Image (cartoon, rainbow, N blue to C red; front, side):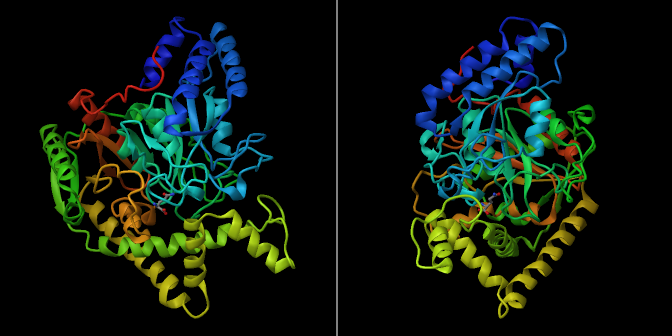
Length: 483
Ligand code: GLN
């Protein structure tokens, strides 16, 4: 694993060309991807073409940005014109978009080199990366374990040395959970900070795009490349760049810790978080004990709202306009029914059924409306907590990466999101930062949550923690590119 800074130094110093760098990553990806299943598609031709253009710019001293020439992986629910965008679903297995997502345009304009499209849970529904139509992703730190979901491919590729950074989407934890399981930094920005135009929608009031990277400074650079306001997305408000605001200090900061997060942690996670808390205190922060009683309602609230929005968003996949179509049918209704039954996987069908149920006339008030009220109450509790502190600290996930094929029931699986999904309900920024390992050497992540548009606050705290621990929690998986 190398940071963006290290890659840039080598490119700027002329000790490697972007073409050589890209070829090295592509070779490593071809070699190691069969074991990791991080990439659904490797876009070799496009990557090499972009690398040559980056070399030509550098030779003239015209590098476009700090990301110019840096290879990355894009989650496969982000539209790339002319390149399949599958959402890891049979429904879209052959879907070739006719337009680019805004953020892909921004990253391309910054000179970053896309190596390919990242594996994920089907339609981003999952926490382990196992519901993909193209098969589960493996964790580079232990191939018998999951990489975490739903942005499994971007996380596994970065931790496996097959990309320098990754772009994921986070509806209830999908950037932070795989970052935590793979020992990386994952940032879920404030709702509205990053445009979602051209990102295939799951839960529109929750979805955000975020970077998965080796360190906080890298996450900040990638955020800055994407955070322009997009007039084509009515929820986009954009954000100021955060890199110039990074202090790398928590001196004098008040860090809130809600008791309820500590009740759900497994012993190794608890130990790592407690140790991190002591380090934050040593760096000059004050710990403020807090209560978050609404935490117990967040999973039910999240899964009602996310499923309702998914049922509505996924209504467009009917086989008539694009995507998979059933081969034979008795009439139109039968055609749509067969298309959707055959095209969607089991978990996606479950969510559509749940979502349709909670939105149906007889149950709307009992479920959907009640969830909206609870969402407001959860948001209010966060606001109260932020009156007493500058940021919040807790675990990202209660456990480390699960064993593949653990056979959890859907409800057990949903519990993986206990610490992450409340943040999406409130629209707040949050990130996962590596902070330890369990007895098997699997990574543990801590979660920092900030007030709205407090990205620089949490990134600064993450940077302070990284400096204090001097890279102790950055562990190479031994796979991937060696330069
Ligand atoms: N695990 C959560 C879900 O399945 C979150 C997924 C996500 O953030 N996309 O809904």
